[in-house]
Every structure is written in structure tokens, then in C-alpha cells.
Length: 485
Image (cartoon, rainbow, N blue to C red):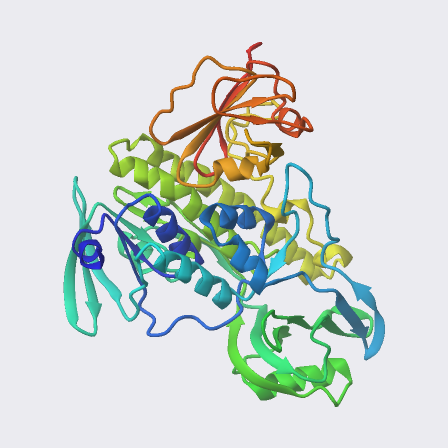
């Protein structure tokens, strides 16, 4: 099995961060032979993108990793604020939201990025695919039928022929550079942040901490607890160029906390981050595509970068599978849909960054827009409540045996889904499409059906008898037809 994958991969993914891993899982579960390589010699070991947004949790539900992510992570912590060393109260980045029938996972979930990646790698291994470390993409050429790539690893060089190449290889993307695609935007060198993972045994790990200068609340440091251990993710503004070393972090803690008992230890990851806001001029050139940071780079404010990359992969997977099966028409929509979203998200993140720099009181607030649930691919001319391109809502139902089931349970897997509200005369399944009639309690159906016991599905889809909704494999609405249309 493994050799077969090696000799005849159809897709080569370069870069095994969250974006590359998500794409590899989505392709592997569609039985698309895939190889995923990374030039790093060891797996990334840092918390970097530690906020998982609600829409990403829905993707993880579909990919079969949500239980593991829930078990390993925690809800967003309560932050304890100290100004000039004095306790100034407790504060949340965002108030917890109650789940609703349509939105089962409404809140941010915290898990260090390296832990998220490990869970995704375990899932990928269940499909017989493993990340090939210490393997670099040296060069590639494409023609009408495929891409020929040269790889370098310990054993020497290797030439591989694939139908498609995906660069999920980060902000310094080799794939994007070799294609010569401009990476437009700016870097603001006047601002730098020190990020890192440290332990601080004097602090209660159930809370986060915000130590700021008196009268200047945005000047200070944040320590946010990381699940699964004793470490905190550290964030601090830098005024001059320094090496990201433990002494530097300790000095900042001493300066802003006024508490000599806080001793930092065990610095396992650190980086100096510059506000770099960039968008690739295009996400596709023929049979080569860009995803994640290779296509768009975000400031860490708002926790959008990793999540946006995962959504890129989730949008691309089923379209690549369709192209490999002979229908390339969908692949054009990858760039048009995702580049529009990335531009919008970059605008959001940049606004948040500007607020943080200007010292706005609401700079730490994260509202609806960062949860990525309202991202839509709809035509701006569409004014309907729920139209093609919108996220398909969840709803609790009962199955034919009267057991509880959710729409998300019906959507889970590599297929697309058709919901017919009320009895339908179309019962024949087409390949790759799962059909269900959604009926009200007391109604009867001769086909495969679910019962909308509380009416939540009808409400969420604005359905009347005869409404038919086609849901794409990535959980967005392909078409919705109401009888009155």
C-alpha cells in the first residue's frame, strides 16, 4: 500500500503544517494517493497558532479529529489583569456563547499548534500516509498533464511526477517564489513582538495573565496558559532588537509584573514576530496551487492565520478530487473563493492590529467576525437569508429508528448531501451524493429520511415543503431551491 502511494501519488503537498495536513487528510479519505513532504528535520514544537476558531472545529468534526482536539485542549482562559503590579480585575477575550441548534461549537478552543498538528498527523496515518521530514522541493516544471518535481532528501535526489502540486510551505514559500507570484503587502519594522512558550510555576495555570504599565494598559506582556502541561504562551512588545532568550523574557516579567517571585523556566520555543501582512497576487498557476501562509500572511491578532489556512485546504480538497476524476471546472473557484476571504480576513486582522497599536480599549475584544462562521462565498448580489455559498447550519434531528442525530452527522465524510424538505419523488442516490428527506413529526416517507423533531432544520434552512438544498462536501450550500422560486 505504502509503496503504491510513493510511486504513483496524484498530489504532492509541500509543507506539513495545519494547512498541508488538513489537505492530505481530506484527499486521503477520498482515496487520492498523496505525498506530503516537509524540509524540517523535526516536527514543529511550539504553540504558535493556539486558538482554534468555531468554523475550524466544524472542519475537524468532519475530518474525524474533533474528539481528540476537545480532549487535548481547553476553553479560552480567564485573564487576570495587573496594572503597575496592582490587580485590576478579571477579563475574557470573548464571553462564552451558548451552543445553538445551528452552531454546535460557538467558542474558541485553545490548543498549542504543535499538539493540533500531532493529532492531524495521527489521523493521516490512519489512511496509511506519513509526513516525509527532511525532504525539500528543489525544483518543479509543469506541462498540460502534470507536474514533475525534484525532491532532495538524505538518500539523494528523487524525481516525482504528479497531477497537482500544492505549496502549503509557509510565508517564505519555495513554491510561490519559484512561480514568481508577487506577495503583496507590507512589513512594519517599527513593531516587533516576542512570542514564546515558557513555564512560570508561581502562576496559577488555570488563568492567563496580563501585566501592564500603570496608565498604559497596552504596554505590557501577556501569558496565556497552554493545555497539556505547565507552559504559558508569552507575548510581549519589543522596543529594541534582542535575541529571544529566557533572560530577556524574565527582564520583561520583572519590569511589568513587579513580582520578584515569578521565575520563568523551560523556554522551549521563541520567535520575534513582525507585523507582516501579505497576500499572493494569485493562488493558482495551472497545476500548482498555494494554500495557507504561502498564500496569505497574517498578524497574530485575532487568531486568524492558522484557521484561514485550514479553511483553504478544506475548500481545495474536494475540488482537487473532482479535477482528478475529470471535472476541472470547480478548481477555478478555489482562488476566487479563498483569495476573497483571505483579503477580507487580512483587513479584519489589520484593523485589530491598528487598534492594538493605537491603544484602543476594545483591541483585545474578539467578536463575531473572528469566529469564521459568517464567512460566505455567496454572490454579493444575493440578498437571501440563506443562499448558495453560505455555511450550511447544523440542526438536531432523529433518524429512522428514532435515535438523535445531527445534520453534521449526515454531512460528515467525503460526499455532498441533498436535503429534500417534505416527501420527495427522487430516491435514487447518485455517486458521491447522500440524499435525505427531512420530514416533520407525524409525516411519512418512503425514502431515506430524518425527522425534524423540533423544527430547527426547517427554521435554519428557511424551508417550505418542496425546498431542496444541495450541500457541498465542505459544508457550504451549493444550491437551494424553494418551490416558490
